[in-house]
Length: 220
Image (cartoon, rainbow, N blue to C red; front, side, top):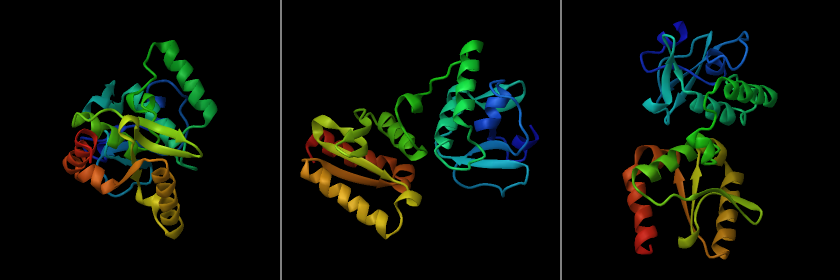
């Protein structure tokens, strides 16, 4: 509770710490993991690992006793995504995740989450999928294998691909060249490629939705 209070009324216990609070994993020493909405906030504290999220919606938050915490579904989604980041204190090892799932099933708690069942692999992908739903766009296929490539989103009937490009994984000359190579390969297969940045998805959702709607319904 002290960790949550330190970051304001919208902060919640999340990730590994949420799994411990739900009784899914044994407590361990280390910083308490707390999530807050948005991408900025108060400065870091020694005993707290802060995670800033643009997809932490009110329906993903509940209380365990008097402590605000992510729901079980959101907790598992956070753990699975954090596991992809090496050395992240918010993550759990594969055997711990399996243990937490077994314990949740034994306790009758829900394990599956909307982001996980939607096959998203990052916060940006989950944000884009939510954008599609909020603006009544057709639901795309997610993380689809096309030959040696795995593309983020595909509307197969419209031959449209959307790639969501986070700055960290797409910066630098090599990443730029790799992205251009991917685009050429996809164009050769008759696919139209739209690349969207984190800023466009998070700050210009209406503009993005209008553009995609024109392509999907008006043919470009």
